[in-house]
Image (cartoon, rainbow, N blue to C red):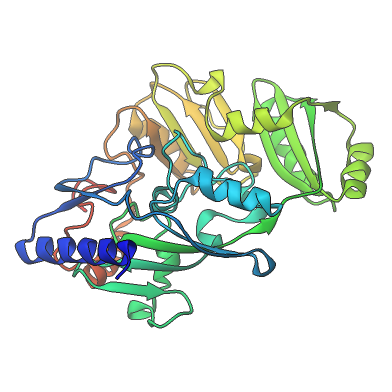
Length: 353
């Protein structure tokens, strides 16, 4: 039996033992996403040793890797074949792993144009809360209770299973790329970005901060050139570094002592009257707010636009936007079906979940 098979069995046995004792387990990977959400209760379950690319078929645009595989290794393998992870996952540290990234459901600037992390998940292999080693996503196991569990793993923060392997759809890297910069106030930026998206241009990212709109174009050289002629604007040199700074939140905007809020709203939502500076990402659908305003004030403003607000960095409880009763009840039913004893990353999403 291979080393990885031994480790998979060992993880399954650890979970089964914990379930029998009703002892919670806190899943531990590279630790780069530990600042997200609440602190999970329980004994540490280290999964970093379960790593390596299982299979990669560039011609099929599919990659399968173990959850502990470093993102840098996956991205290097894809780059060698002229391909990429289209959801541009943020690393937030050198030890970022594929499993942690999918568990956190994190996507970068290209998310509105290529899809979210969950949209690119084709299948998963997990250990559920009973210690059972299961596969989902077009393989041998039928999804429990009709849910697409492979995609539910994205953003579940380990509460629905210990990720062992993830299969992802990948895409060819664009042949050409350019970023144009425009002087706009926030309201104009929202209006303009929404208008641009109705054009047949190869837009792959749109970001606004401090009076400037950044629009990334990527695709065939002829398409990029045609869009630049129609758009105008100022060229941004070294745009790769710029978009990495947005993705990894290394820009000055993200610094400071005030809590950093992640606001999720419809892209055309007008600017809200909230204390503190705001940056617009995902073409306006994801907004970053640096604010010392009370959590109730921020969430009330966002809820009035049918959105939700979560603390990305800083103190507030609950860190994730409270769910309506009906939706929380659905969450609990799913949790009960895969983790009856409630031992996996208990408290990670909500203090009582």
